[in-house]
Amino acid sequence: MQIILNGESYTTTAQSIAELIKEVGVKEKMIALAQNTAVIQAKDWDSTPLCENDEIEILQFMGGG
Image 1: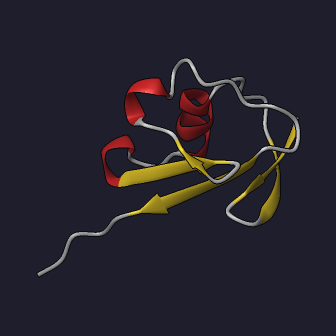
Image 2: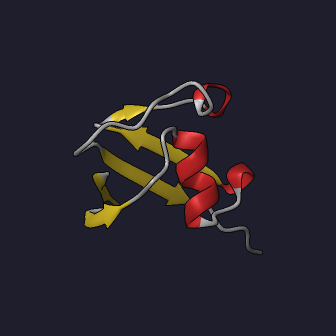
């Protein structure tokens, strides 16, 4: 399926937000995620399906000091 991931065209076989996060390889505890401008809570990632042409934004947080 074709989606837009962080502003770029991306092809995925993932069927849910959780599967996409695993496929991309980001640390789940260090991100926020929006699907078509709606923020999706981490507790809902397993049950939130991906659809053709979804726009997904993954924001990664970095610690520092």
